[in-house]
Length: 173
Ligand SMILES: [Zn+2]
Image (cartoon, rainbow, N blue to C red):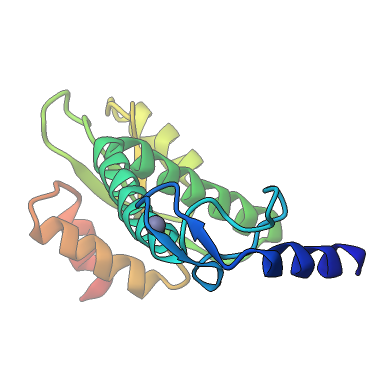
């Protein structure tokens, strides 16, 4: 309350003020109020403050854009970690789920394997016992129904991912 009165008094004593940025002398109404200056008015005029904000906003947007591009893998990892968290949650709640997963190096080649399971833990044990390389396995998707999971798996196989196509055909036919 006291501040508001004092503020008004101070501001009213001045008619014009020189902007520290554009150096133009403008009417005090062209300056926003400030709690940290002697005359209770901002150093820069409203136009200059606005211009700064616009430029700065673009800078911030650009910064995040380039950061996201430069750290694409980091974000990808984060998204995968989130999927794993969701998966653990589902597991703890005993909710039904079907996981579409991939083995990036299953034959020690560049080929990627894609499969569907209800337990990645058990499936990785099985893969290992078959002599598959499960290193770096990751989740492509987690869905509620098996049909959904098989559809997703099929689309990955169509994109060239390796997998038990025979198994898929058997289950769907
Ligand atoms: Zn200005």
